[in-house]
Each structure stands twice: as C-alpha cells, then as structure tokens.
Length: 451
Image (cartoon, rainbow, N blue to C red; front, side):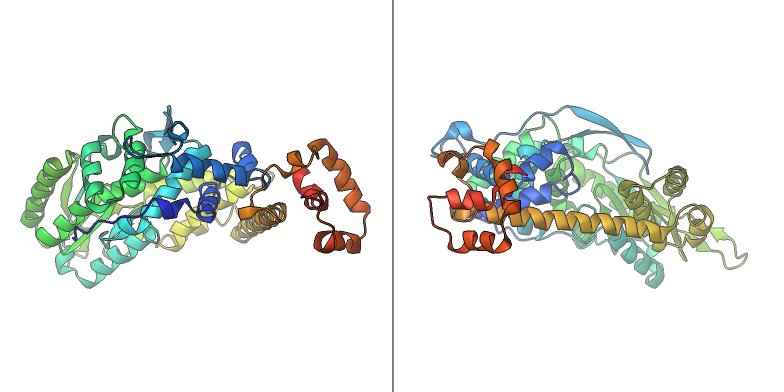
C-alpha cells in the first residue's frame, strides 16, 4: 500500500452546487418527513445551503484564521435508540444524527474523501461499499467454491468483538493522517470521530466508510503477508478458505495478534475452523457444514437463504396479505426479499410461501408508480427553484420579497390574478416585462412563494 497523502480537499467541497446535491442525497428515503420537506422546499433550500457553506467555511483549527469562528459547525450529542435487527435477531444501539445539518455534512465530507477511501481498498471488502454488497460477495464465493475445490476444503470464519463501539479514536485518526494532509479536512473528520465518546456510532453515514477505511491494512496483511488464497470481509465479519486446518489455525492466531497490536481490537471467541460441505464418494451422504455468511448459506452445489431471513420474509408476506391495501413500504420490503430469493436456490420457497399470498407484478407497479411520482415532484421542485432564482446570483433569492415590500400575505392574491391572466400576458411579463427592481420577478412567480 502506498503512503501518498492528499491535500486540497476542503475548498472544492464547499461549491454551492455540490452542497445542494448533498442535501438531496442525504434526504434519500425521508423526503416526506416534515423536517426534511421544509428544508427541501424551493423557497428554503438555498438559504440552508448557504448556512452549511458558512458554517463549514468558519470551521477550522484554532490557529487557522476564519472570519466568524463562532459560526463554525459542531457535531451534536445524540441519545441511543435500541433496534431489533430482524435477520440476526440481535439488538443494537444506534444513534440518529439530525438531517439539519449533521447528515448533510457527513455526506459532503464522505464525497470529498471518496477517492481516498476507495484507493487501496481490498477487492473483496464488501458491505457499505458502492457496488459491493452481499450479492457481489456471493458471486465470488460461489466462483471459488466451484472452480477451486482444493483451496476451499476448509473454512475459517471469524469476526471482531463489538467492532464499532471498540474503534480506537487515536488509531483511526493516525491512519487518516497518513492519507490526508488537508488540515481543515482532518479537523472536520476529527470533530466527527470525537463526536462520540467511544468508538464509531452505528447509524452514522461516516461510520461505515471510516470502519472500512481503517481495516484496509488488515485486509492487505491477510492477503499479502499471510497469503490467504481466498479471503473476503463483510464489514467486521471475515472468511478465509484454505486447504488444511493447521494453516487456517495459524492464520487465526496471526490475525488475532494483528488486531490487538495494530488496532486495539479483539477477535470474538466464537471463531470457527470447519470442513466445508461436500458429498462423500462411498456413501453419497452430505458431509461437512455449509458456510453461513452475508445472509446466505453456501453449499458446494447450491446457495440458499439463511433460515431466519426465510422466516422473516414469510411473516412479512402473511401480514401484508391480510391488509386491505398494500402500501409502498410493504411493496418495497417484499421486493427486497425477492432480490435474495431470485439470486439463490430457493424458488420452491417462493412457490410455497409467497406466490399464493401476494402478486409480485402488482408490487412492482406500486413501487414504479411511487417512484414516478417522486421523480415528478423532484422535477417540479427543481423548476420552481430555478424560477425563484431568476435574476439572482447563484440562484439564491436574497430577500427579494421583503426588499420590494411585497409580503407573503399578497402572494395568494397574486396567485389568483395569475390564474386569470392569459398565457400570452404571462409570457410577455416574464420575457419582456419592465424591470422594476425585482418586483416583476416576484409577481410573475407568485405561486412559487406561496406553495
């Protein structure tokens, strides 16, 4: 791995268009929440974009000269919420950062550091990496099992004990400093990391990126120094295939020592080395054990869903089938299970437990209709935003209404007048109307300020 570090990350990420995009990206999946919808409103979003830019422009180490240090961005403290993870039946404590503006800042920072996070990332580091989800990992595990049976005879399966809450801040910050030289970017990253008293908080967009970035040296150690033929990591869960048990036991000891010495982390005590599934030649009986990993159970000749996911899917389908009307949320939940089913050898499960109760084509239509409506609303918001920005620098409305003495109370009347005017009158007003210091723009788009 190279030791080249990167500078000049901070200023480019504060471009107005970039920050506005991150508002929309951070809002994905929650645009109907009132606190998010009010910010994304075309009449408000530019103000919030400017607020974030101003906060980040004034965020810097103490020795750095900024115009208004009192306006600097600071992370908030969050209470923890307990959730039940359905597939693993575990309870997890997560933190929920606020949309305004913590989630937005997280997206801005990750996008600015994206190339650094991705450079040097191990090819089979899966989970929370774009285009490297569970199905990506599944495809390669199946390939190894089918094409290299000699080196897939035994399996070492292990994971890190309480990984996210055990991340050592000093170790993580030390690794980041080796890769990033931009002092202001380092400062913001340290603010985010130190925003939690211990570890990395589950629920933060930055946590998944920082954890994968931190474990890069471990991946290269296992692959390049321990010379593992087939190795894959899904966040803090690791699997190594090998041709004999002794070799895998030695690897386990070396990895455990490396985790302790370099990261102050501990390997969970339930690590396993076992004979992988195979068919005995003499009796034709199935021997060994399947590999349970990433929600799948891998056999030498098939891949099926983990039993807990099958049960969760069955329960969800039964609940939805009893409802008088299927919601978009229900449709997406079942279709997400269908993604697992269509990529595994569990078609019989679909025929027995899903097909008799729900119509998959109908679910797809519900999701498609919802997506089209959302795209249409997004397009309309963008159009209104552009219209509201006419004649203003950078598309921002700098209190045009207030400065020209047109109050919001007059907007409804203006909207009604607009409905009575002919199309040609409105077009003439927009294109060739007399400039009255901004009043023409407001009257021509009175609907935009009142919607």
